[in-house]
Length: 315
View 1: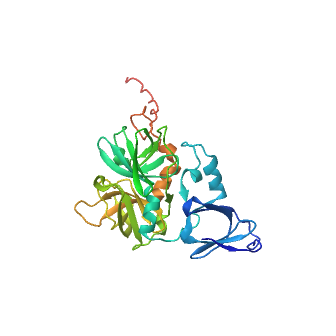
View 2 (view 1 turned 30 degrees about the vertical axis):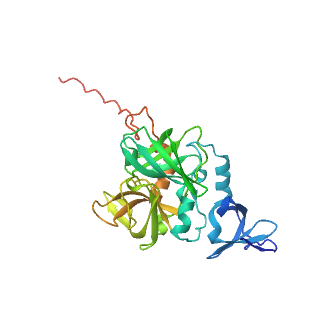
View 3 (view 1 turned 90 degrees about the vertical axis):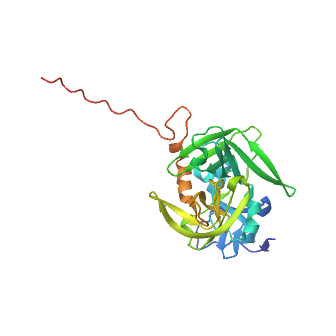
C-alpha cells in the first residue's frame, strides 16, 4: 500500500528532475519526479502530491526517454536501445527467490531444435529473446515453448515461427524473435549490471536442465573473472546442466546478470555464465551480427580482396 505525503512539490537545489515511470507489482505504474531514494523506499513527486513507495513494491523504473522510446518504437530490429531492452535506473530492492520466481518465470522459455534443446529469455514484450549461439548452431528450424501462469496453473504454448535475428559465435549469443501471427505481448526481464556483483553474492538460475522446464537453482558468485580462451565468465555454484544453456542468471533484485552457457563436466557447483555486459554489447550492435539466410558465411560479411597488380612478363 502506498503512503501519501501531502505537501508542496520540492526542488533539489534548483536541479531539473527528469520524469520517471515507476512500474509496480500488479501491473500498476506511477509517473513523476524522484525526489529521493532511500534504502527501502522511493519518494516521488507526481505533481499534486508526493508518494512514498516501498521498494519491495517496485518492479522497475524507466526514465522519460526510455518510456518514450518504448511506446513509439516499431517492433523491429531498428528500435532504439532504450526501448529494445530494459535496465533499472535505480536498483530494485532485494527479495527472496520464492518471491521472484513466479514473477520472472513467464519470461524464461525453452528453445527447441531438431538437434536438442536449451533455454532463453524475453528481453522485450515484442517476442525478442536471447539464447546461446550453440543452442541454435547450424539450425533454422527452431521452436520456442512459453509457460504462462493462469489461475494458478501453467499453460504451455509452443511457437514455431521463430526467426534468427543476430548471431555472435565468439560470444556464444543468439537473438531470436517469435513471429507467429497469434503471438501476444510477452513478459520480459530487466538487464542488470554484472560489474556491481561481488564474490559471494547470491544468484539463481531458471531454465530447462535435461528438459525439465522451469527448474530453479540457487547459489553464489564464485568468481567474476574466470577466464576461458581469452574470455571472462561469471562462475557460480548455482547448478547448471545441459538444457540450461541460454537461460538467465539473476541477482537477488530480479535482474539478469548473466546468460548460463557451460559447466565443468562431472563437476558439481562449477557453472559459468556470460556477463550481461556482453549481452548489452551484442544487442546494441545487433546489426553488425545480423543473420541473413542468403549469406552462407553468417554472421560475418566479407569483401572482395583488392585486385593484384599484374606483373610484367619476365625478359
